Structure formats: C-alpha cells, structure tokens
Image (tube, rainbow, N blue to C red; front, side, top):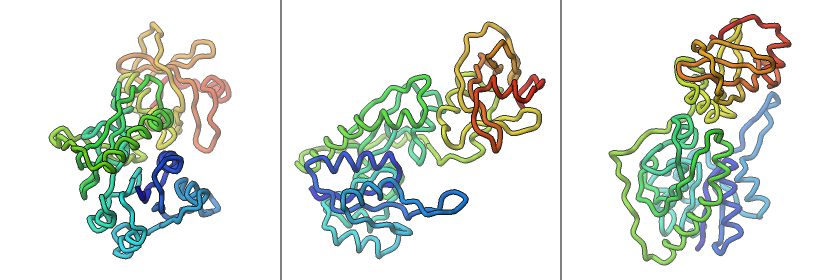
Length: 306
C-alpha cells in the first residue's frame, strides 16, 4: 500500500523506520515545523523529519493541519492510508485525503487514557499494565474503532522512556497486522466502549510538585512517569530541589510525610504510607548528583522536605 506517515517525536520515528523496512511504500511524511531550542534558539528538526530525509522521502511541515492547503497537498500523493503516531487531531478534510482514511498508534489500551500523555498517566496512576492500540481515526480524540491491541506490563521502575521503548516491537507487530487487514478489506473494527473512557491530558509544570501526603508508591510512580519532563520537585531549606531517582525502601522506621532520615550514605524520606530512598537530586541551576553527596556538600540540617 501507499502510506503517508504522520508523526513528530522519536517514538513516532521508530515506527516510520519499521515501515521503511517493510513491504509497503512510504510516499511522504508530515511532521511538526522545526522548533528553536536552547539559549541560542537554534532550529531543530523533529526526529521523524530526520528519518524521512535520510530515506529520501518528501517532508511536509504544515503550521496547522486545519489549513485547506494541507489537505490539498496530501491528495497529490495518492495515499491508500495515513499512518499517524503522536501528531495531531486531524480534521475531516485531511482524513478524506487518502483512500482508506487514517490509522493511529496510541500508547494505551483504549478507551483508557485518551489524550496527549497516555504512557505518563498510566505509570503515574500505578497501573500494572498498559498497551498499544491501533485504531481508525475519526474527528474526535482517540475515539475511533479498534483494529489491533497489544498488552504490555508496567514494571515498578519503568519510566516513560523505558516503557515507550518496550512499546516499539509489539506496536510494530500490531501496525503490520492492522495494515494487512486494511489491505485485504476483510476485517471488522471494534467500536470502543466510550463510557469507559478516561483522560490523559497534556502534562503541566505543576504536575511535578511532590505531595508527601501520598504513598511512597504513588510518589515513586509519578517521578518515573514525569521523567524527564516535567520532573518531580519539592523544597528544602526554602529552595526548590528536583528529586531525580528514588526507590521504595523496606526501612523499618516510622517517618512523617516529608521527614528526612540520613543513615550513613543513604537518604530516606517519609510519606503517608511507606518510605522512599532518595537516590539522586538536582538543585536549580545545578547538575544532578547522588543525594548523599548533595547533603554532605550543603551541610543541610533540614529535617523535612517542604
């Protein structure tokens, strides 16, 4: 089939690379515009664009998918199907610009976790499993009928980064199966149970604030989910400090929420249920470092995180 691929981040690029090794023809790629990065505001190209250019594939970078000119440009490629991974909600004019519409690869078991951050919120909410869903796109967010699903276990220390990597292989299998169904025309897409839908909204900076009046597991999971962004922070001696790495501790000592206990080279913090080992921290404007080194270096006598 003639495929036009749409996506932006590294996660999307992995699926583009998979398609390029397969039997189908990728005729073009649509991705977000280049964005300025860093203090010098140097323009950086999205990973999907870089992969496409390396393969010699035409790249479209619309400022808005709602622009009429974008839909008209898509029609020129005579695509059988659009494959979408982490791109944008597509208007009906765009969906109509290919013969079979569009399919999306989404990082959850739909209808759970509809939205921009399904992987992050599944981890943050202490889910033990999640998965990949390949579904037919309509005009609503993550709403269309399902073609394929793959379940994936979430380990206790999985971060967003590690879980996304675990999704590539099963997601690629699901994509191949969905494309085979579409090519044959012999399939039945399964309607989602919309009453069971749950949101996975875009992350905000305030999501990073640690609430010590939750459990050790909840705090650890939010830190794993929000690594690398927006992170997880608290205050110490009136200063903002990021907690970069933790473990759930078996320490047999009762600590109040946020209370700090130092035992040799190990830093512990209390929660409403359980104790966390604080392994790595990062003060604002500084590099991340082992928590024990930070406490030795500052000579902090503070006995509680804010």
